[in-house]
Image (cartoon, rainbow, N blue to C red):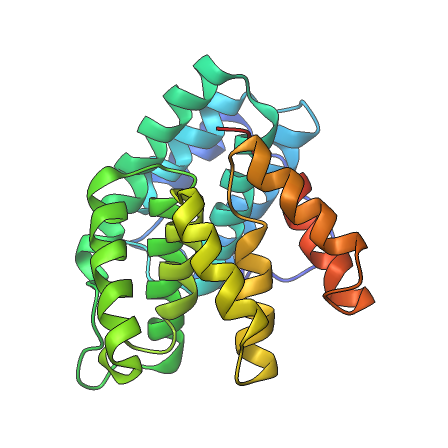
Length: 239
């Protein structure tokens, strides 16, 4: 109770069943975070079946806490890297069932009176729906909004921009890569330079991945940024 403590918990089937029933109704956000985080840790350790963890995620479609979602999103990226192609297709379907309702609920634009954390959560949810979950509708809408952003930077909420860029890169063509490379080279601010450098690491075609790897060793980005970009390349699944 309360979710405080420096420890991991593993739950019996009976206890887990009770916790699932009260997940959104009784448990606090801290307690929900602890439950998701502990169950994911047990899954990684091989103590809990992956199916049990995914079944728990199915109950989070109405979740509103960014810390809970951060754990879920991190686990989705981890699974995307380690599963084979057939398993990944099944995972994408499961993730779309979780993230699509959450995105529909929070929407694509800022609402009156919403907090900064809600705005940040919108970007996080849309990013994972359009990349790891490979939702075609999300990808198309992200491209449309990115085009609007190119024409008018104030047309899109600033917390949504990184998500749009990551989705365009994830689904990107060689022409998109050239555009992003140009934006990296001609960036007006350090933030913009870093954003587009990291986006280059999100392209998945083998030839573009090789080009990004060469970019990181030829001295164009400074050393610490080159290292981060290289880690981004390593996290990619080839298209």
